[in-house]
Image (cartoon, rainbow, N blue to C red; front, side, top):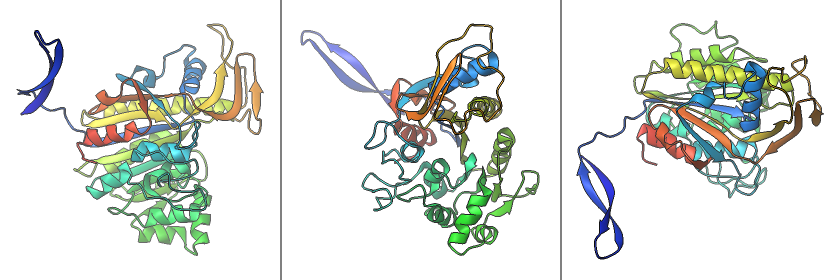
Length: 374
């Protein structure tokens, strides 16, 4: 039996009082799985420009059409404008920390002093026997994925981040790791006098260099690429592997949407949106699918006519190495910005995505979707 609270007017007293009464209504369904899509620097300006770039119209992204939408402020513990380390730590732990700090509290001093290790949503899932996965077209040791499993006072400390991937605090650690930055992982292993393939194998993760090489019966794998790869195919493979656990899974999918390389950044936003659409359409009602960004980015559409292309013909890497770009319709400064970002969701627990949130609220929404106490 569920208790609900109602407001009741007390005649003659001029008071509104809260009373509890029993209700036979059923509780909201819980999520067996949570899939968190993270657009690194994928703020509202980038999503808006991607829709115009890809479709010639606003509001054409699937993310724009998801049934539950909110805004989330993204500040770090001590600064209005966050980096990926502090922002992702807030999203997956429910606690704000300082820029550059991964998975530690705000008592940390970057590069000098450790803070309290903060328990992440991935670690909660591992502790409860769920499978867990990470997909990223950045390095698997970079700040966003690292915040899900590592606890270091400096995001640049990839040697210790790699060690934390091998030595989880809860469960058997991340079960599916798919990402770029293969060379960086090899260097991080070498810094600890380890062979990355052997170290990953000892941690229960078989290393592959392509999705096609992963055996059909595989359960715990690391697929590392030198460069970009098919994000949609990687998400499909991760879900296929993780879905074998009847207890459910947690999956984080990141795409780097920074628009230093203007065309590539907007194309990646379209690619990520397609992955969100496909995932949301194929997953059952037992899955909370959520999109957000860790922070926004200084990209602006300042002109243009409907029916005309947003951008002139440009190479994918246009803008690389340039601090400022000004085109006929778009201008870009190479800076993170502090405005709110979109949160979009569907599935069990998605009703919590409404209004103007803090980035720390997303952790609590995911925990509540699973039905877990913090």
